Length: 111
Length: 473
Image (cartoon, rainbow over all chains, first blue to last red; front, side, top):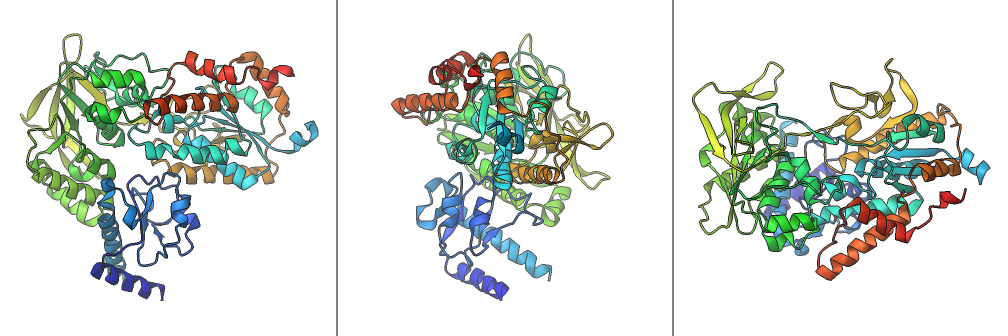
């Protein structure tokens, strides 16, 4: 069920590029956000195969419920609500959707 | 008090950098009732967060508020200006604490092993970093910035940091907490071009895509990368498609975008990224005047890893320059009286338990951070690393494997330190330093103005906390 919701979410995202919260490149991967997220929408998680190689964490817009908990928890203020993203992090939305785009490809191909 | 303190485990953490801070926070979360002393060689805490993270990355330096909240404000003590191995020995620590956690990091740089590496004008990038960040031991270095070209060797994030610092405008630098002496020198810098040499190709560059993107978007700086240089060889193409990380793919895309950009003739400064180039020698008569580079190709080695192999052709090149910053990695140095793995440059350990020569854990001795795993990962990596070490400590504590130290009372270590280091810096002293720096920063509209000499730091700390509590005992 979660998977269906997620795939649907990605499809919706592609059609309507609206987003809730996004993590920018100053992320230090200390996973404080993952600890507080009530819906487990921040990836990858410690222990996941790509956790050590990713340079930052990403919020799945299809699952995020806009609760703001991660923004409060981030020790380096690397998480923004979409309307508040500073100009220098303009790229973050696109990068985020590419990350989940590739992730879903990987999920599809691995069966 | 005495009886109570004997039942609470007392832990010394050696090194107050990010790994030490994460370890202290993790210990307090996991064990709660534990007394922690954070020993630090400098008068100031937070290690590379203060002395490594680039001054134009102030948002990352906010992590210090979290460290402060999770450690010093929860009763963890800061004992600054104390050098373990010089002021107090490992054996003395073991006789005063139930456990000692080493978090000393990797304090030196790797060398290139090429001729001319030691010519004046050739520096470890880490020396430049420590200098511009106001580390007291590096403030007196004199970087000659009078040439028009500098060469940075390496493709990691330290290379990106020093490249930015050499090309940021004076106005941008003045909004940071760069050390005053560096601000002055960088304002007067004649450097117009920074050439960044990568041994491997664009797909293997160790920059994070965030750092690479930043290099391409600096005000008044033209980033140049030859479009032909961004064409991937067959081995790299295959690797990128099958095994490449998200960062590697993003980097290659960014580099293609940069390669296709028109040149900006009006830019005041230039960054030139070169790939598949290794330095052969640094030349000059008494000081750096040029660097010779040769070309590499990417090959798949027997172990499946991609490596850069020198191409044996006539493609040699001499780049004129007056400054070389070598950024090819950090390396840890051995600590007195503690085992050291001379091959991996770490304390031999199993999940953070330091091992003796018989490969058995030394009771009560632990490691965390770069001295445990080597200089890899980013700031947050230390949090999970610290949790692993603290889990081992908690298991050993519960199993009764930690011996009761001979001098278990806090008063005893305080008396010893008061005798050895009358100018020890406590939390109160550090808070006075921080206040002083922030106030000076407010006057100049900067995040802070750092005190950069030991004498100044100790003076400000002493005025705030004139008599260490221990002196009464």
